[in-house]
Length: 247
Length: 247
DNA sequence: ACGTTAGCGGTACACTGTACGTCATGTCAA
DNA sequence: TTGACATGACGTACAGTGTACCGCTAACGT
Image 1 (tube, rainbow over the protein chains, first blue to last red):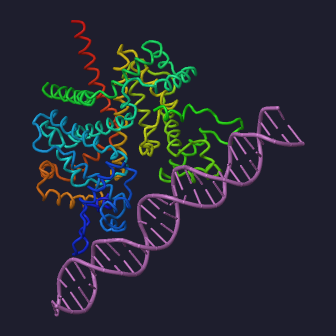
Image 2: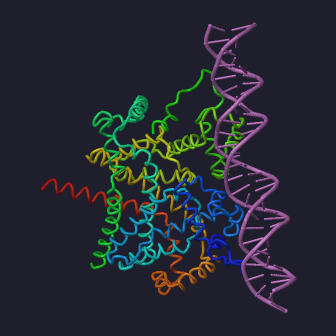
């Protein structure tokens, strides 16, 4: 942990003015990943984007993972809510969650950054905002953190699923790929291992099921709906706890 | 989509008996990733594990991504609930969710498989089980799917966070890395950009905050607690809808 | 028993991250 | 202004990756 933190605490090495800045490097990396895809983000490609030699990057960053930590924190910066947060905790958390979702949608490849980067300045800012959002609830730090973490988890899970379903979602009308799917599913059902699938096959049928699932996956309100249900669960518990205390 | 499905529908190519099977190959891949880490899972390493030449693998699989699709589906197989599901929908979904979490904990590297593999036989089985779990609710396919997807998203989000916090969680007592953290956070607070953090710094202080957060992150009941809150939210809505219909 | 051909796998290539070492230039002391 | 020198820049090289191509060998249908 301490070692991982070093990316953020390491002092500037010398007295000479470097030609680039970490912010500039992170921004260039994000630009490449956005326009050409995450796979194209190599040290060589990034260096050429900056008009620098490949190995020059290694004076700003110890490894590629450190670079990705910089990129990660830059995106954490994008997801901060500008201005003041609403007083009401649900509104505040909803705002934060939406903004996080939007940032991830803008840079979906960020989900492929899988190492656990130590929290950078913007990561801590996000934590700060989230904790502030629920500060009026009179909970302990631990309880507040549980709520905040649950929301973060929700956003990540949602975006991960959305990404996985991305290729399926942009197909508009039933389309011709339905035939391949029908054949495939027919084969599965024949094995007898899919009782529920077989039942659904009979009643609403493939076409209707497909349409309903597609609608579900690409429903723009689904994010808010499920978030509100999660918050409902928390709120109900808070209510219960409060009434118990009164008694 | 149709092309992606091809991994599962492609017929056996010739009449000769192959030396290996896809199941065997996937199992070997999982073994390597489990014991040596996901990075070590290269085509060469996998081939040597099977006692085969590297290029031989390409007769079972078109690309490494296809191999990962096989691996993905094998793990989907691990997460299926054996035997019958409870009748009560919450108990059934909870069981499924727990089992999924356990499978991912056993193979955390699966979260690094980031392409969107077409649903394999076991993936569809998981869908089948989940849909069965909520079949008694009298909902449309689309509504059932929304609930099922929300649970899947929850599990993924939870496991992703758990993985990110893994290195932080296994540190037992406050430890010496707390000093590095204190110094780091002091620096951040000095910038004035972290009002809530500063407030928390004053009241419960670093040590207590750290302890509470650590406890939260590694609380074994957190998974169930938040899952139940999500399901509470769904159930409340179902109740509301039902009473509205009666009126 | 034989010819066909599908499974097998060696070699080669373009690409990756990065260790090492040299070059040249910005900065400070004089 | 000039020199010394630390430090930023970066070319080369290496071990590793996924995989295209192509010959080889052995198992099968006849």
